[in-house]
Length: 378
Ligand SMILES: *Cc1c(COP(=O)(O)O)cnc(C)c1O
Image 1 (cartoon, rainbow, N blue to C red):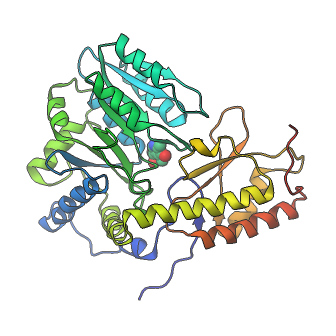
Image 2: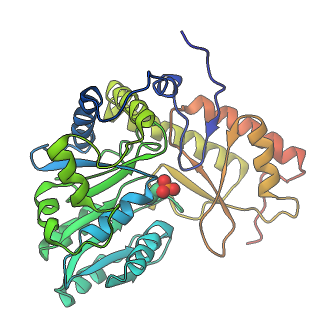
Image 3: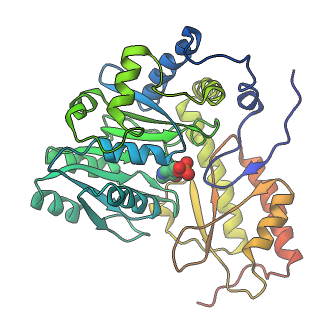
């Protein structure tokens, strides 16, 4: 048995709390990743990543990249747009704004369909946009906008994309391996995630799961990046079983362990655990009188964006530091013009951790003379 590592409860939206078995999975004998032994890890890992979203591995494949989750946004957007086509981005949060920014950096034509941040997007407007712009190549939507906790109606948006002969790319980074996803039922052609979120492993490994047929077509699409090209990485994997450039070796061992633990826990039980955690988060929110930026009916159930109270003594940094010293990490919000902080139900934690967190948090409020139940002006 190895020593236990000090356990921190991370309530930020990833990287998330990991198990010690995942942490220690990184401590392995040095190995050159070009060895067959290492390839023997990556092939089943790619298949497992497809299985998580219920894809058939003949139709869908997983392509691994060394980088944080944003690398997948970059790769998918820049690699999958054919000559003469436009990207359609449903923009209702900071992550879809990031996708629009990526398109701008590459000088790619993009329809930036801005939608409200706190309610679901207008499907009629999406359909109208598809109807009026036959030169759209793909529709891009963030599955779960992690900045606010908004869940997008991906299945419906995917159905619209397909109705007009387009494919759907979804940034599922903060939902994958948490909210059950089925690429067929959810009309998803491409999705993506990063090892530090749903599979509860380490940062530095990210992956796109998508349709082989479209990836193969994309061999003839304009090449906008050398390092961040989907077809190039896919093709190299298919031919050699390896990543094109040096993989994050130890991170891959941790991801293998994370996947093992994912399948042991099971899709359903894991999603139930995340919901149990969110229930405990909401209980504390309600007891302390906090308000959330979004209605619960449109939330993913994985992130809560909580409005700062109107109290002169409220100071997010101080409350954060108080909790941090006691092993709990809370995170600032990502909503412009509105003071919010976030509590997230990701990672290898459970409801008891949240109960302990609320104790520490309540002590912090008392320590800094912040009135409870918390006050709002209107
Ligand atoms: C975490 C996250 C990403 C990736 O962010 P990185 O900081 O690059 O790891 C991308 N999209 C969404 C929706 C996320 O929640």
